[in-house]
Length: 137
Image (cartoon, rainbow, N blue to C red; front, side, top):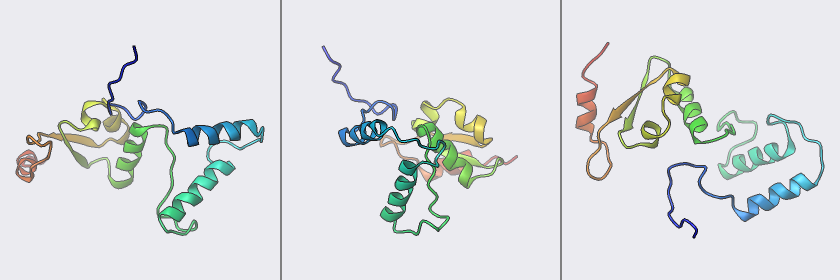
């Protein structure tokens, strides 16, 4: 009997869309030699498509397009892009980054994650943030 339960605990749970799998298979069957590490035609085409979707010039440095392996890598890259090592990131106590990513974000970024309790709807109350931030140093 197949497990019919669906969960969003990891970005690796869901299968690949048939269109994506088909495109990957087609590319694999082409036997074309491709440079690795983002210098291949498929990656360049993806970057151009993303620039087109976000209506920006490929020559613009922003938005930068950086492909990562998984959600943890994406979170770490995003935190590094907008913080310094002496900063902190405020997170819900039920957020994925607090509950499921272990110490990876703090270890790699040097940034502290501050867990804030949420209300019955899973939302952070501003007053609770102020209580948590009353200590400096």
